[in-house]
Image (cartoon, rainbow, N blue to C red; front, side, top):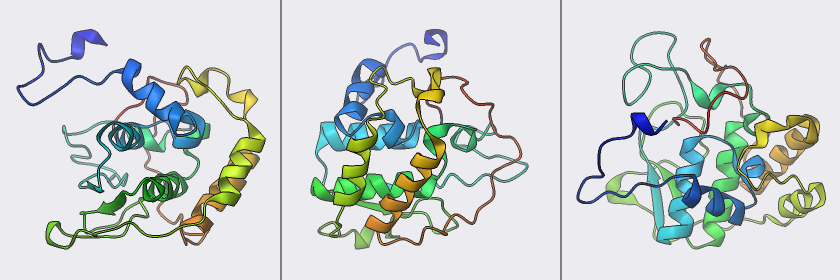
Amino acid sequence: MTARLPPAPGPCQILVDETAFVPTMNAHGGVVYCGATMAFTAAYWALWTCRPRVIAMLGCDMVYPQSGPTHFYGTGRADPLRDDITLQSLEAKSARLMVLAAAAGCAMVNLSTGKSRLVFPHATPASLPRAPGRFDARAALDREAALGYRAPEGLGWNDPARFDPAELRALDALWLAAAGQDADCMDIPPAAADSPAGTGRRAEG
């Protein structure tokens, strides 16, 4: 993978690798609960490292057309839609991120205007919220603690048999409820070009 890196970061850039983002994911419950794809990984890293008041996502809706350009770099496989036990509900993973960000004083918003798998409220650059919403995450956090699904190395797919998909779906429902979302909100079908389970590290959002 190092051969695919740019020769050097730009003047206002830093390289964030697994030595930085895996600990930040673990600080927020670990990859199994956070969701193993780059959009969530980057957001948790920013939340932990930058302590922002707002994280605004743009062009990161995890909705992929069947043909034509699908990604910021052109075309590719829809990594967040792959068969991964940590990504059974992208809506629930975004709900969890929004609720935990709010507890840290950060509002999550979506600057895109079309369909989205993210449950963040829509906003514009001129209408960013001054404060995050209020959420009650106690039931979801208690359930996470009871399940004890940890993969501190950041590679939950190495031993997926340790994790019960039904338990994770039930946990997803708790996070959707904590964010005030209907558990039946998952109405966008997966793309045809899903990646096979367990391939690669976290990829594009």
